[in-house]
Length: 344
Image (cartoon, rainbow, N blue to C red):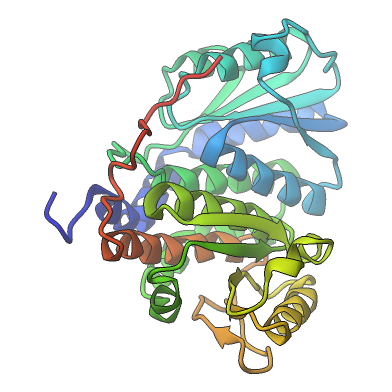
């Protein structure tokens, strides 16, 4: 690719179209998986994932707990792949998320979850992958090839697949509408300009990324992308948890990106932003209403609270690809990383 047209940028710009491909092509798969969830009536949902996919699983955790009122727990793949232990999951549903569906530890954990009695569902870009073969149902992402090492459109559509499944399982009309409107929301998110944050991070070495609820999952994904594409030491925290110790670092122009969306957690996120800026930190907030000198960043307004954090990451991907190039790095090929990581 050329200096200014990376694979990563092309894949980010494809997110609205990739979202439409999934929604149009996956209707039947979503309906069958949702019917299986209603029939199973699980008392617990467990997730299996690593990396960006684990951040998608964290997003699903909050969405299920807030919508269905069921607890969601992440299980370590090594429980099965390294330690050889089978979990008793007779009243559970297990959701595995993996863009490639190939990592041996993820595949083995999904096999063991199904053998332990769980309804096993896969969210993956490859519907003939080993993980898909190990599960009862598969939601194929249909995003097409993703050549950049940093996952972007696969992450977004993985989360949207989870939200689509949740909407149909719970027969939630509001969430159904939000999922259907996602392509247009993501198109608008591509146009949000976060250049004030890029100016502050030019030459920076570390920062915090803060969120609450589903926004914390997005904060974790953003922190990972700062590390792998820009060589920035970024740490993600809940906007509440950061006050329990880590806030001591947020002084003397320490950069902080705080994710605010229009939900019940917003007043707390704004309060944390204002407290940290009062300590001397440089705080950027994706919401309005905070007192200066908190710097607002634009975001897409008026969205369902379970879709709004996902739209933020679309804006962020445009920003982070450009920041990597600004720092003289190739976001397509981060050092020491590969597209498919297979762990045991």
